[in-house]
Image (tube, rainbow, N blue to C red; front, side):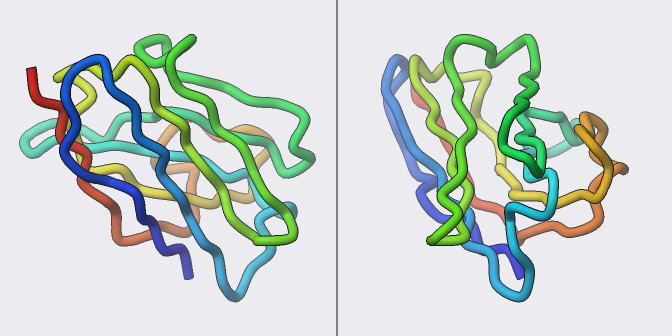
Length: 121
């Protein structure tokens, strides 16, 4: 089970940190990522951290602003989001996948329920 938290309403230019607590599986054994979706639009890859923790991949739209990380003892994955823009508004899903560095939503096997992020202009 993946449970996200940390979403909310923030002004443009602000920051939020999303958390994803995993139970029933160990985050260090999976590629862990974040996917976001806005109503009426396709799901969009945001970021992924390899199971080894040594490799990350980001969507071009968030590079330099978002950082994905992991706390193994807490079995939790984070997404630090800085310099937020109104176009970052979406529901953010924590995901886990068995492939090396999945960047497509369909490559992920497990999904959380999502947490809403709203960025006001």
